[in-house]
Length: 503
Image 1: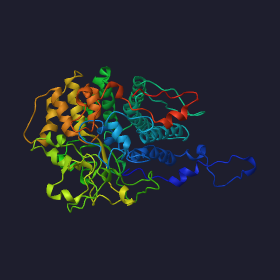
Image 2: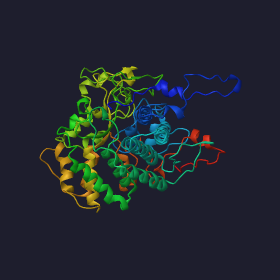
Image 3: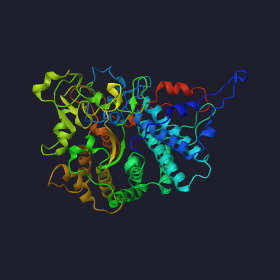
């Protein structure tokens, strides 16, 4: 299922038409209703493909909101950049823990709830297909439920106290809002149910690549359990991770620098990626929800770069902090693969923008060769977003052992990751060393902020900087972003009015 996001848009769109005035009603031989259309397996599979589609929207729908960068700007390894503090202002406000309902992250909410809605649709349509083979029904259900948990996991981490539903809303389109702990309890139970269907392969190959796997479900489970610090599920999470490790289906790439190249996409280390390279795909500013490339490399590359090293220019967002570059040992292979350092001799080959350091995120930097999708130039980059990697499996498993979840060769798991990038070196097993390894391993991958919060380190690490860029300190009241005012207004006076997060 390579690049599964291309769907029969015209066929789906036709299902939304209806007539509202009796005297204008004309029966059409070509009209197809939902209840009639989604009664075959091929059409059910179309609906399932549509449930994957919002994954590709995170970088841009009506805001620039790539989920990895939205996480990392609230941490301590990259800046926001752009032309000034008014450029993508919601990023700057999030970075300084001063987001407000009238200027906050909003598109990610709509994207994720679109995903939830489509997953719920799939769960309904399964019951409409007569004589659907049990194995196919279980596979479709498992994928839809894991995807739904994936979307809810993002909503839960950013906003916590969210509306949660597993059957699509009717009436005034509102439902109860739950506390963050209640939301966690609901989607983790649903995820456990999806795993228990025993319908997902540990890894997919060929045309199936890109669909949900058992390993992806296990990683989602471990991420949520650890973020919640749910010790009652630590043992199960560790068992799941050990199953990935013992399966032999995944392995670290020997060269860290290969992970983020096109040749490294869906390599032995990739457990889940959001696909953007689409043969024949087209994504335009006039149709940003079309299948195709991503704008992320354009966002984070140096503005108007004119160098001749194969890189392409960008808009100067998310420059890497100098302190991030300095934290790497000179012999650490991750340094060059993470940090694109502009040679001082090339300093005049780009426009220096706000918070510029001369260092950019190499993992997702724009390359001229990575634009073989069709569509508008800024939306043609084919860089897949690496969401879960086997390195994280090993480090999560090591952490769970250290935290008393069970037994396992945690020292070996830690040092597989450490030794891959620092050849011949090893470190002793400790929670501090696992924390340090994650700090080095996942720069720019959307992990650091959530790690600091779940470890209880955010309040001491996320404090005002010496540059005057971040002037506020993180506090527990900043754990959840405010809901956009437009969303608050949409529920006013309805059955269930949304209650604003304290921020």
